[in-house]
Image (cartoon, rainbow, N blue to C red; front, side):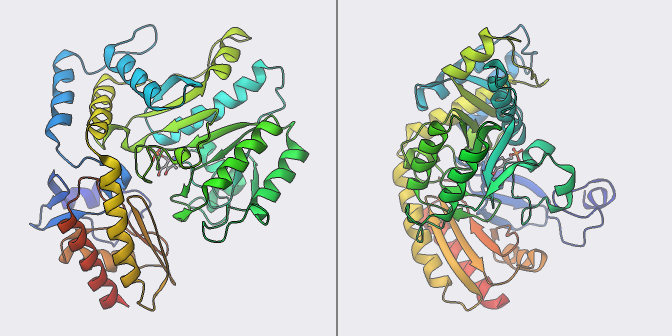
Length: 423
Ligand SMILES: Cc1ncc(COP(=O)(O)O)c(C=O)c1O
């Protein structure tokens, strides 16, 4: 397997002749990854933040098996099915009532592309076709496709090589860290208002990740920032797109990031943990106002349609996953994870190599002073039975919500040992 991997496979954010080790997985169950080489690891990544209810869950397995016996896929143009309609209804039940229509797609990046197209098409329907640019904040991350890269951080993101090939959008300073935010002095809000005042006739929407900027720096900001941003968007007649692909479904301690601020977006992007990490599925929700405008005015249709749109296997497992999440006291679980992360990361951050630590919900972040050598540190993690994948100067933990106190404490103790060894 590894020979073929080396010969034929290209891994994410990697070189085709990558020297870093790649670990083969033969089984995954609960919070454990079982490697070909025999190690059993406690997963602190939830497979890029998706596996909220753990691997190989009997309830989720059952949902997908039941659907596969019926049919695995049908085109969504002109056809529909219960998994999609039930899931859309469920999403409606757990989101604000002004959001209504759900457009399914196959990945987070596409959900954001779809959101951007909805915003552009809405203004086209409203006879304001010049409103087609996007305004966003620095340090954001919204995906890897060309459109989403244009609204992700243009300089320090993963995408700087492409910056001259992308549509130029408007950027302002990122929201201040939660501890240094003040409405009165926020440079970000000031810049945001100025840009909206000057350019609102050109801006279709503001797009932002609520509460936590994820892959652009794992930065937590104040809910009041979102309250003010919502007001500014309304004042200057610009739509607000919230990208909840990383923060949705409980990760930050509220069901959605925007619940911290009690605001409502015009367009909402969901993905990642929606299926509990079983299959790739994403959803873009739009307000009734947007749906109505696009549908009754010219051209009367929304111009997008992924081949695997609303895949029934993915919809079935997503519905089972959301029901499973809502069936236990997930808030309490996440609060406990938050407390443990806070206590242990505070201790670990005594190491001189650590610049800062921060925690929100089931997300714990160590910001190191220098860039982390991922290949080297990961070997040490694996040797000690844990799975983490740092990036840049960030070592972060986003465990499945079902992790036990014992496993989480083990994970953090091993992390501490590795950091003390490495630095
Ligand atoms: C906030 C946010 N938006 C969009 C994406 C892109 O999602 P996907 O990787 O499913 O395309 C990500 C992925 O990390 C994300 O964190």
